[in-house]
Image (cartoon, rainbow, N blue to C red; front, top):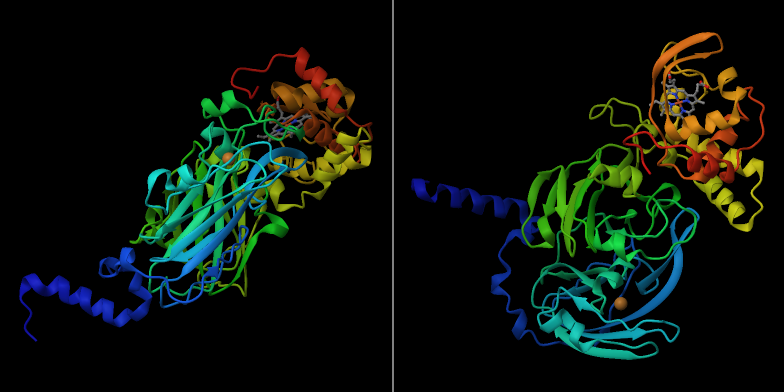
Length: 494
Ligand SMILES: [Cu+2]
């Protein structure tokens, strides 16, 4: 066949479209479908709504329908981190809000309920709505009331919804956002697993991991100085037992949203490459992407195949957020080794340190602290987990250090000689010559003052009770006293 030179790219594109079949439908222009003219067929359908990380089943309807969505606003206290509580304002009882899934051309009858025990009025702005305020102008709902409006889903895509009641920033900062997927008429390509992940930034009066019920901090929010940046409403929401899971060989799709209110996400999965990213939740996909930007009030759909088993780590690659503000989740892929693809062993602790271990002891110690009955045993157990995450890279898991480089804590005469000094070392670091068990060290330990008083107390209680050391517990009050009476070195966390 003779093909004119100018026609060649089109011929290739056509051939590709034919050979890959239905899998590539989503790249075809949806322009031929007139969503505005779509007329609902059959009886109204009540939408299936799901909590993250679950996604409602794909829509297999071939015709437009009237879809009824009932969403209830619930204000409730939940944990944002181990032992840290926060009053969230939610769409449906969780953060992010319920996942809504409709088909392009559907007529959506939206009911917003606000529970009678709510303290605030709320509304909803769905970015999937074409119309003033995205629904916000029609959905102002006082506590104990319900409002209703109807819209037609004109554009396919993955859209954020959020509260738009003044002060808007505060409502969003308290967790009032979620995702609505408008599927193209032909649906999205089939995959084996779909997940719902949404990032958000939170602002509390207490610092990161400071225990107890933490109020919202308006000033920090205005300054965009987030205390927490998390996936699915809490640090650890996708960690350990709560990790999302898949089997080797499966194709995975993540509907990734960012509620903000302030921060843009650099979404990345450590150990995976996104085969496809529908950037900004739109119709077209980019291929072979390492990290994708998800704007505040925006989304992305990422797809990849789980070729190699192990734990893949979801992060915001603005990396302090992952390790010091909570933006870290896990995808556990089960299956036989794929030595031809990756020879290495899995060492969880390299990236996820204390998060590789169960956080139950930290919860137990937090509960003990709250009730005023914190026991030494609870402190030691929690300290063990925290030690693994904060001290073990240098002093080693067995506390023996590394000869000539990191002094031992196991059987350390220097450590055990002076309790107060050991607290100050943990907070403020140490440099210059020290002699530990008769051996000289002359190096630098960085200050660890980013840890809270109770964390330092738990770590030192563990260290002073392990590997042959015998000492009493260190209380959070003792750490607080040391913190108050010593200056932080330049550059140390407050
Ligand atoms: Cu609200």
